[in-house]
Length: 86
Image (cartoon, rainbow, N blue to C red; front, top):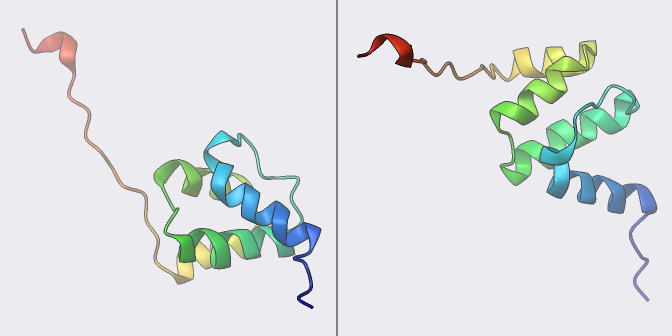
């Protein structure tokens, strides 16, 4: 008989699917945050600019060093001043 997934694993899977709805990740324990970022988000191809900002906003050294080690950078989108075009 196959063992069911743990509650933690199910919770992390759910977080990956709904991460765009989160506004703060700072209360998540470090080991879960690392698993969520490195294993789940990156492998699932779910890293967006908003998700990256959420992880960086935690200020956790482990996350910041992962971002730096993987050379993940913000995408800078230029914004044209629309009020001065005409």
